[in-house]
Image 1 (tube, one colour):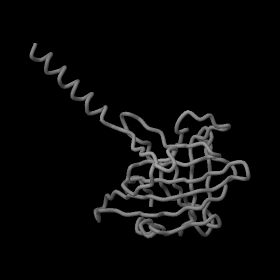
Image 2 (image 1 turned 120 degrees about the horizontal axis):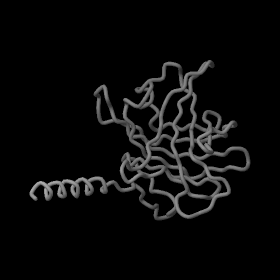
Image 3 (image 1 turned 90 degrees about the horizontal axis):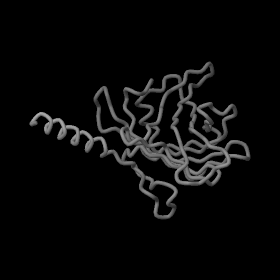
Length: 197
């Protein structure tokens, strides 16, 4: 009997810990379709696409879906820094087209490394230097659009070989005249082990 009670207690304790994951979404007082803009590493991104509010997906066991940050080698004079994440409609709106992901693309030097990444803090990239793609069914759009990106804050609290970077920023853009992305804001934590530069 004691063993049964102990097992039930352990199961309840485990269920309690797994149910503690909560979505990091804090509605903006001026615009409740978006999360407030922060630099705390809440792993949340929100934006409007053609007036419909989108957010990165949430899982009760894993939390907010994380972004992918990588450097893509190219045959040109520059490589490409790619910051991408999954998205879903935030609320009950019914969009004309449903998008699954966003990717922001920025040209970087062939020698771009993690110290260069930290140096992007406070940097703005306008539409002549950055592009944006929307994914539909996880297939990148064939024709990237233009983007404006402002890396408000990028920092790490460690000098260890394995670091955690906190990255926050603002973005907007458009793909042709039919797709407009506005009021984008992101706040992520990214481990250096997940970076390929």
